[in-house]
Length: 105
Length: 458
Image 1: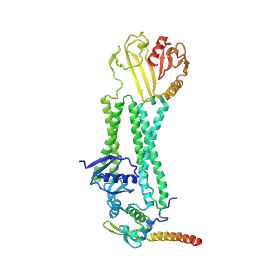
Image 2 (image 1 turned 90 degrees about the horizontal axis):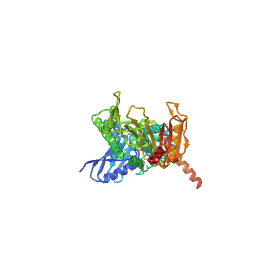
Image 3 (image 1 turned 90 degrees about the vertical axis):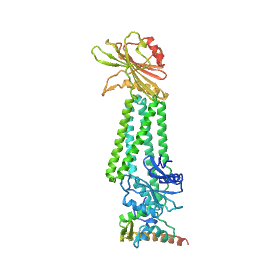
Image 4 (image 1 turned 60 degrees about the vertical axis):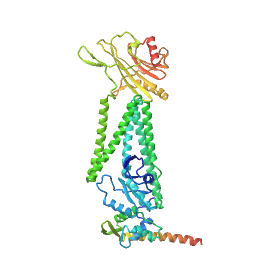
């Protein structure tokens, strides 16, 4: 069953939103995500553009500044809630993992 | 040395994998994509180099836009920031290249990527479905013709050709749509686990369709009686199609350069494509008419009737003339044939009209020559059935079916006779090895006359 848009977040979505906790230029996210994840996660430029557009349309981020063609964004309350929901979901997954393997031990 | 070249490319619109591989090979050979499009892609010469290509889809982009959309430009800038330079666009399809050794892909989120492709393919899918509906309508019309006049249909080379082309195109479209739907279904599932589902080389579908269409064309043409005319017609039709595509694209490009809005450009371009196609087809028809290729009957003289009415006189070849059967009529005759011939059947009608004021009978007969043996029984039974079901304008006018008759004096395999009485016309169906002849006599033919048929048609 395909996911409903933004009901859960992909890894790329999660890290892009994470970068926008503080105001940030969209383009800077291309470098921020690999730096944040020790190069484990890279965000492609097309993906970044598409997701920023979709997040903005969904009210999860808002544009804060336009300098020429550079635009900066920040998380909205809704975006923070989505990020928190995803964080809780991941924690729940991690907790389930821990419980199952501790039972085995 | 040419700086530009066009190549016929048969990629599925969504098959970014095959497109990228192809463009990388072209760049290594010194050709950079400049304008992809329907059929022909334009390349410009560059220094041969190893480049990486990426194809992505921007659902709102269109070739009718006077300028790239603001949001589209922004996406290009994001890509440029990551080392991906914009190379070319074909509606939603955006082509980028990178000189980096191992660049980060443009698309790294499988879910977004799959959704994007599906959005971009919406118009393509609608267009394919509309095209398929046209093919189905054409095929249904052909089916109707086949059911109504099967032998005439099977002897019509152009009908057979048209059906085989329609069918090939329809199958290719259905295969392409099914292939896309299957891929998209699997891609959505794969995307849930972060995987990008690659696309197999689906250009093979169109390659197959083109080869099948070409083989159909060739096989139909070489077996047709006037194949050279057919070849010229096909070449002219291909020329028209290519000229229409190029001219339509030139109009679109000119309007874009003049800054004409998307809506106006789209309407004018589509209207221009349709108009150009109609004009070129009309031109072809006029040229054919003027060249006389389509004229099957050419008069050899004129006959002036006593009342002053002028009739054209024809002297077209016939396998059997009335003079072969009797020397009773020593007047002049005008002979006309209406021949239809395909690689399956020949369906020929022959008429001889007396050029005299005497009350002489018209001499006419039908010859069905069966070239494909498996159609012999069908053709014979169909002619017998047509006799039983002879309906004109909804009214059944004959109710006298064929009855088997003695084939020996005719030198035939089988003979059928329809006769309503001694004083009425007698219609015969004479079945020879390859020919089936249907002919009507006022009186029972003599054994000598019957033997002439054996000589001409056995």
